[in-house]
Length: 360
Image (cartoon, rainbow, N blue to C red; front, top):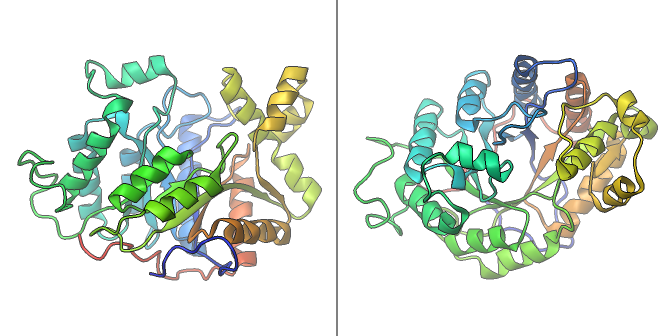
């Protein structure tokens, strides 16, 4: 694996991966959303995408991805070679031992294909987070560094064992281990990933006032080689919609901006249609907020979006890109993946992204 590149003149054709939230559109059900996510995973597998990640969200009308381990098990069983993982598991919601056990089991079922992306946010509002955590007051953001270290120790990180595990084992006889990623949209995640020698995925697709450049500079400057990763390795996310024309793509991207606005104003609901998004009457405050939101970062023809992604790679030195598509109709998302795969030059059925770690 080549070292993470600093910004500048870097190869543009890095691996592409998919982040999917199993979004629920108006007029559709959770079952519809999960079926569409399953179909998208199969399509990404065939087209040559490297990874297919799902995220943890709770009590949100537009998101059916509430339990990444359950959904990952299903998706991995329905695909052949693509790596499947979490983007991410929100660690403050769970005990480290349970997370380590769940992903050790997934890795045993699908060796060499499981990614454990870990995040620090709750993945919901505070009231719902309290309901998720139940009578477990120790599950708090303040304990995140300790809990992250515990997950790594239970994964087999000899730097943190045995003190970090208390004699516990996530699985009786591991042969391989899930690949652990640190997720973040701030410098905190960058610092944590650097200190522990983990690959870092920056959530550029939704970060407000994003400082991707500063976060990645910190990550690379402070990175400490580990048994898990010898050199810094960066994945940057981006929101994309691709269509035959620029105007069509901009129209189809309308629901993503409505969703972004709803998340920040508390007016949650399913994903609206492009026509409904275009008809939404915005207050002046709404317009000001939308102007400050990234929304869909890249919407256009395949050639236009490829140029945008190439520029993002040059700017950030990303080793991989993680793409998400928030649209009303799953067919639009599938068309985006297909058009972009062709324009990027993905080779269908090629091997999945190589494991970054040299040991289990």
